[in-house]
Length: 457
Image (tube, rainbow, N blue to C red; front, side, top):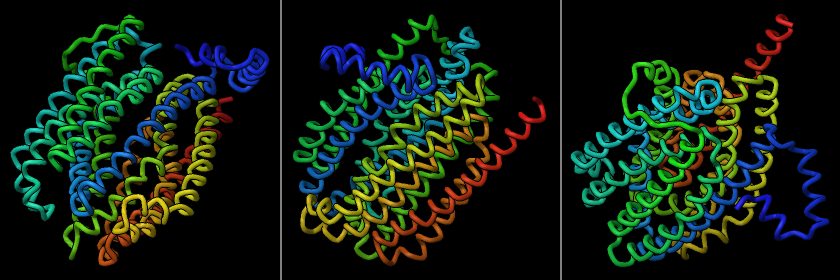
């Protein structure tokens, strides 16, 4: 059911007509504002429900597994995210950008392009999953936990499924099929929530990973069905073959996008490794993981806005650069303002939020405050990332990220003796440096665009 039809049924006729008039003035049908508003509404609803489910699962796992067991869950999840990125090769960002640009200008080329992307994503994810399974003992030693070998091997299945699913989701985003993506995210907690809690209670860490496998397989199948429907509606047939024409977009976008995410996640994994190798490292990791569980709320705004704005800005940059720059500034202002409000709420309520996990987690309140303001920086950073990559400056953005994460690791090494609080400080300091560099670059780029427009007028 369309949201407009649902609103017409639920609201009184006079109120519905008033709201419809406001909508027509503020976001005319088919305008960038209208496209963004619809995408954000679906994303906000879906991400909100998904995050609530994640927080409920986090609290349940903290009580069931304790600090050390919950720390192990955090390490496994971080490892899965890192290696999934390695297997993804940045193909998701490439799929979104080129689908958004090609769907109206070169629809005849979309099927071959997307089929090649899916083939590469499947092969690369499979290779990484096999590597993780084979070298699980070595990874467990690096993580200072030899008992994680079986869990890492089981997590290799999650890597394969998540790698394929991320590309399917990226293609749907390129077609601005945010309603379809939202519906899947709304349904996922129905599987993820009960299976994770039951799995943790019966089988511990391995049960949690088994639940991840089931819920990921569920979303893979639903996204596949949604993708098939979208492609049929667009008159596109997938051609599963690797075309040499992929080499240029792979170099311009896939490789820097892959390195961007890989550097971010490698830095996160490195922070975890530094922390768990300290005295009582897994105790501190449990505290950090409990505070970090609220990342879903702290980064709620960019997780809602960025997939939508990236797809729409990629399309606008190819068709209307005036609207492109207005969308960048609007996105930056809105995201930063809302993210600041979220950070303030997390700061004020941090002691009460940590008590939910049990008395042994109360000392994580200070960690949550520092992380909250580090997450606030994700909003402007994500807005600048979307602006840079949508106009083809993925390599430049990678440079700024590399500088920011390098600083983050340097700070972490100096502050890790402070445990979870020291790592949280390192995240905050590194984020400040990165956002400052991105802001300077965007302002310089915007000025160049204005100068060029004046000269060509």
